[in-house]
Amino acid sequence: MNFDEFTGTIQHRLELPGTGEAVRAIRATLMTLGERIPAGAAEDLAASLPMEIRWYLTGAVAEHGQRFDWQEFVSRVSEIENADPADAAYHARVVVDLVHSQVPPSDFQQLRDQLPESEDDENWRKLFETVDAGGWSEHEA
Image (cartoon, rainbow, N blue to C red; front, side, top):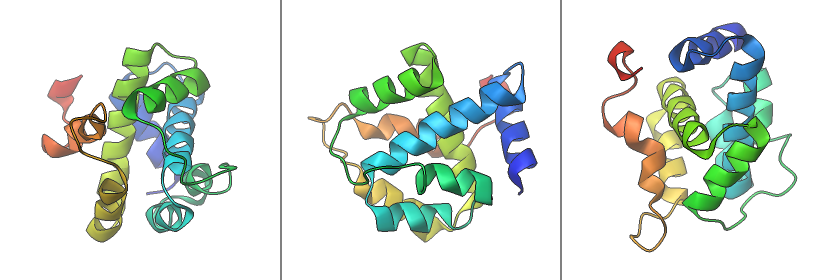
């Protein structure tokens, strides 16, 4: 999948009016994810993505491995994307689902392993709801 296919898929799935909005959702999600996980995990996850998308997880991130919870993740995505937090959380789930379909299972599992799943931590599992439900479908919209 190339950059245009990736952004077009996100634009379609999120029913966004233009490519710019799709890129903003992708950038917000992947930059924030890149800030949360270690640099090596970000590099592994990014390796199978289009070059322009890969950069959001790696080159656009000033500091990898930051410790923040799900609520802070949604807040950061919302701010970067300039979207309502509920919309930003949904957009992040759809972006992560498309990433899941593009990367090797071991790299995606490494991502999951980097995020806590304890009940104390506002539940990072929410990020994987679409993946865990079997992936995005036309009915989800």
